Amino acid sequence: MARLRSRFIFLFVLFSAFAAAQTTPETAIRQLLDNQVAAWNRHDLEGFMAGYWNSPELTFFSGGTITTGWQPTIERYRKRYQGNGREMGALRFNDVRIELLGPDAAFVRGVFELTMSSGQRPHGLFTLVLRKFPEGWRIVHDHTSSAE
Picture: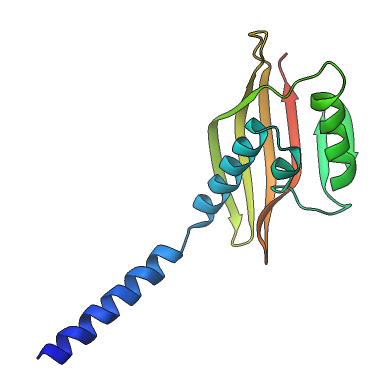
């Protein structure tokens, strides 16, 4: 009887560990976005960009401009938020809605807000297309509009 109980406990612990290790796509995508916010607020632009597909095929649309590629996108962010006299501010994402398009694709909508040291609060809308790669979910397209 003790042996049966030990096996049952072992299987229960094993199953619980396996279940805890499984994450839903929505949870993984929210974690990616939370990691981006945390990196931005540490002024870690490379950490923020880790959420994007590191590919020349990444697309970023903003302000009537199309930026193609991971490297040009990070350079755009550096110029806009780390250039002379610029600041990154504190980032927040609100009203985030995730819609799965399939097992390896998702569409995300939300609102961003930056709080600058001057008290200004630039904000706007974003739409993201994400794909699941072996290394995890990554943003493959970002369309951000600002209401500054």
